[in-house]
Amino acid sequence: MPFYFKLPDLGEGITEGEVVKWRVKAGDDVEEHQVIMEVETDKAIVEVPSPKKGTVMKLNKAEGETVQVGEVLLTIALEGEEAEGVQEAVPEEAQEKSVSVVGTLPQAEEVLASPKARGVAREIGVDLKHVKGTGPGGIITEKDVRAAVEGEPAAEAPAPAPVPTKEKKPERPGDRDRWGPIERIPIKGIRKSITKNLIASQRTTAFVTSMDDADVTDLWDLRLRERDAAKDRGVHLTFLPFFIKALRHAVESHPRLNGSVDEETGEIIVKKYFNIGVAIDTPEGLIVAVVRDVDKKTILGLAEELQELSQRARERKLTLDELKGSSITITNYGAFGGHYSTPIINYPDIAILGTGRIADRPWIKDGEITIRKILPLSLTFDHRVVDGVEASRFLERVKEYIEDPALIFIESK
Image (cartoon, rainbow, N blue to C red; front, side, top):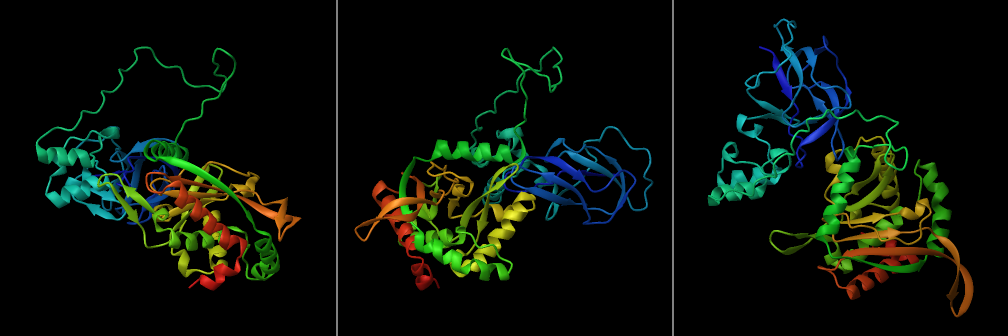
């Protein structure tokens, strides 16, 4: 009997993906664990391996198509079977077990459920096969699981919109509205993820932005002195590693900014580790990659890691683990010419620091007016957790480290 390979559970509550590239075609022989395709989710491009050895009979989805978790991707004739007579329709009972990117899942795991819902179900002993999902696409949420235990049905998912009787015209480059020609661009992939996260941040946090200026003339001179030495080691030394180190030291004095809020329990989670999210510009939009254990890395080590992360982010080769787990975030929009901004918090973080473009400005130093290198700073924070006074003191602490970079090296472990 042919094996019908369905899109596996990719974790992180992901319910769909777009087929970016097939690595095989009908008639190809495949080995177990061989990468057969690339799927783009709203977080990253994931390589999907084959769970079986055999011959590809049919590719059920074309490149560019969106596929839901649990939908059949391709049909494989298992070793010893004839790879002929491909069925157009895939029988519902064709697949006895589903496969995830980390192994085989029992039949019960075929149910679409968020990772948190699965965890709660295991903890309290609920069979997900008997729980009705009310999330997007019928996915089971934690609320659905708890409602099933309490004997009360969760709120019904909104009924699907009626199918229009009139056939929809295909979108064309020449589409127009009443004012003139238009172009329609689907919101998908990383742009869809950006949209979802920004809306969640704006709806959930009580965000406020504080701004200040820092005199980074000494830091400017330090980078100039050390730039060639870093280049000899194959490292492009920017200001960002210094900003990251300054952020790490500042949150040690103001720990509440290095955390998140547990919305369900109403608790502030203060994180004792220093994982800095860094916004990286890519052709598809901003990706926040996470630099872990900043307190254990040198300036040159951070510069090298940032260089690698940026390259892989632009190539969409970052793993899901590299895109999660930040404790606070930094966005260096000054590299593209901006001065001040009101950056949106990288939810569920509590704060995000924005660094603008360094420019020569008149500045009073030691009672005299002189020209100095000035860095604009913008800090957006969640006012539910941090008051304006503490946020201002935190920003002042960040300034101390980047205005006197020797402090970074003196206090670094």
